[in-house]
Length: 90
Length: 474
Image (cartoon, rainbow over all chains, first blue to last red; front, side, top):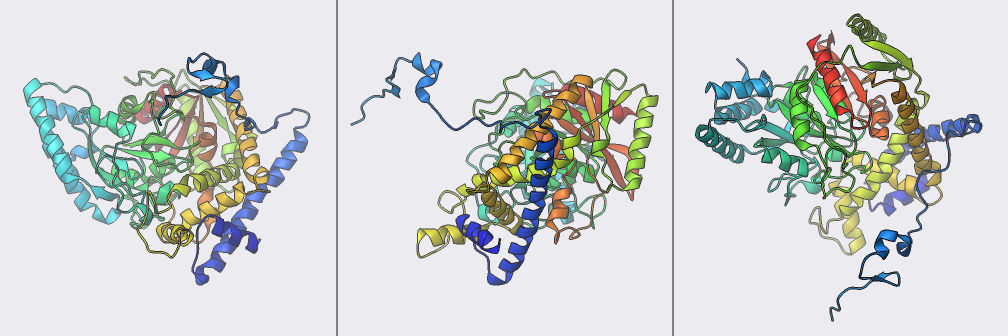
């Protein structure tokens, strides 16, 4: 866990003085384990709710944007072959 | 007479009768700011700009002999994470300590169009991340009821300014309870509108799917006046709602007509028994007044606090990536671009902000995304559904605003989880995007008023304002 948090700190473009780092990591570990409570709860809920289907798939759509599929874009005069045509600049 | 203890309409009546001028009113505000300097409620004040505007309002009133709208010439304060053109927008952070906003937030612009006068920017937890106002680069704000205690957060400065009768109304922002909880701690009203009711344009983003601009006032009517002015669709905020804005005024008590729901799921075992007893007394009082109360089941709301922190930290880590020292931030020297980013962000952000960025980055990392953020989103959906079902049976849900009374300065600083739990009763409403108003009741413990949260249906602000007005009259 300590190594993961150190990696995340560098990914987030942050750094800490040595004397603060140890304490910061400890606090983060404590909070992450607090977040994990939800994981347990969720699994329990999921089990219980298989009959009711209360918790379903993630409500977010899959990130598959297909610009040409949208009807309102097709109606635009400068939208041809799946692309917008814009004025030549150069 | 303390004119700043009056309702907005009462102040305007004094103006009409020529017993007060707008310039005198605004000068009184700055006198009060000076007298209450110890509270540290303001990060910046604009005496010259505000007095000049008040003099213009006086001239206009002398010329036309009428007050065009209730907010004309009324002094207001704005939380320092909301843009006001030409003035500093610090978010109580070192990284933005010298940043001047080039434009005003839509909400501020709308208030100015009505003639309201912005007197200053109020203190907050850095980037609105906190529940005590102790995480401010400019130092903590104190509770006006007892200065040894925190005013709540993150809109602590706005709540303290209203609670100390410095301004009649202030704008705040509410992501997980940042308007309602400080309002409760300082004994004033705090309204979190429905997500999308008020434009977020010009509100510095913390967690974009939860952030809303809210109102803190002494009286429910003043809250309604400001909400009327700032609500509505804004082309600069794609998440602002096109739903029509109701006429919130005049207010009319609906204590007898509204169907009320209460849920034991909002009352935790760990809650102070004296607090629970007060709420029981209050519900009995409502029933005596003719309010119909029924019991509801909202079993998932207790998990809202986990879901909220997962979602909010993930969104914050993404939103705060823009503070890289290039467009915003400190001017430091480094040997390469990577060192520059790291140096600027490490020196510019405070401890709590760094903690949330790290947790959010962790939650969005490959391998952890589904386990953390994904689950948070699912639980959020279930909470929304539970509220939706509940509102098929009732018009309004009542719940405590805070699980505890205000705590002493420094008491929770060393325990971040305890600090996060301060919002346990406000975050479910934020996750569901519902409107809620926290109003102080007439009960007190150690001089601190006990507040109740009035939760409404989406865009049901009129109903909750009317209900709060009814409670205010009890």
